[in-house]
Length: 96
Image 1 (spheres, rainbow, N blue to C red):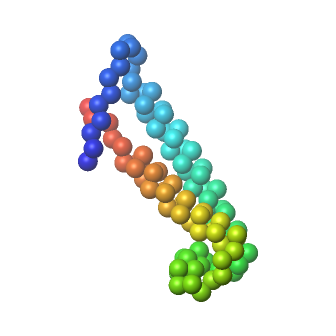
Image 2 (cartoon, rainbow, N blue to C red):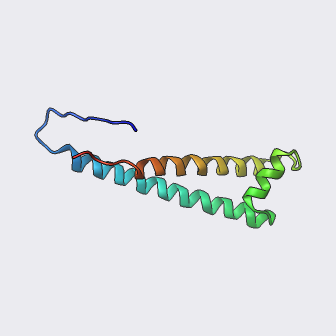
Image 3 (cartoon, rainbow, N blue to C red):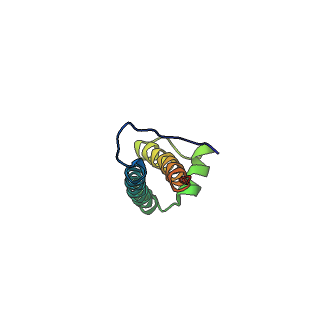
């Protein structure tokens, strides 16, 4: 667990500002996750292959190198990073 303490020289409360910023960032992450999932679905429909099966075949050199496949792998990795970041944001709690 990591603790973070914020100090401001201003009179305004920091907590509502930070909560709003975190909520906004989470909304952006979730929108990115949705767009990336849609992109993966497009590849799956185009190639009649699930992403997990594609990745397994690609990693075992059973798929040729194409621009589409490079993009597919990039979207797959992006989704993992976005989900990890969103989970981190969801786990943030404010100390009393």
